[in-house]
Image 1: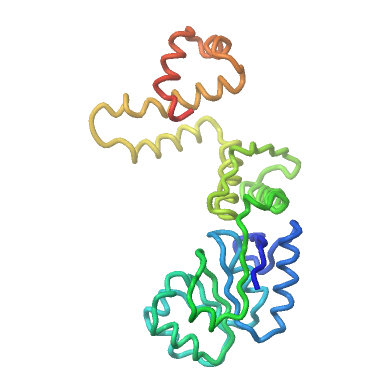
Image 2 (image 1 turned 90 degrees about the horizontal axis):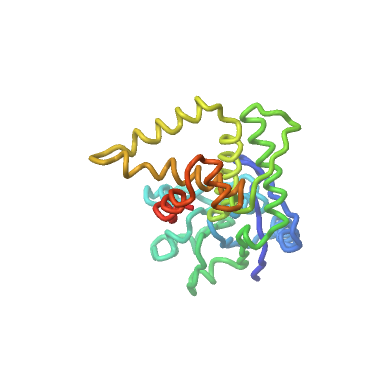
Length: 263
């Protein structure tokens, strides 16, 4: 059985997952049903989509088993207890472990970042769930954005009524909920920086970049690119942006050409 849906983290320690898109609600129903059935489940999906969170909806009182514990042979001491097996993609070719897993007398729910294609795997797992990436679930992204914005406000001690407008281009979904949360926290961190705090951040960053000769020239794009991009965003034309920056249009064009890969 393959179910396409998205399970998304409410926060770093959440045991519940959000279900606001139609398919994620279907996945929640499936997980609830599987919680009462003695069947092994394999959950596939990209990093950060909520595979572990979903697994915790299915299992109760379980032992977490991952690659490092298997390498230490700790799995050999387990008997009957339900197992949450993480990083299964790293273990799919370990025939000795797979043979042990097939004989294990307890329930197994495993997670994998990649699809698993193996006849032995088919023998172990009765159900395969697919957790779709957040980029395919806009409803869940919007709800997660609200949750992470609230968490960021609490973390930074910001006004509850502060209006937060994050452009879609600033939202990072490459690692799903993980990168989404990071991008929102970075946005609010940047928004409430004082000039001195900004200078401190830049100084600390540059300390790790200075390494040889002509570093001033090599690193000048770190200043030129963002100020040109900000001016163009505000003025929408090179002529007006040049006037805002106090340089002539030809100079602006030259600088745009020099830093175009960063714009």
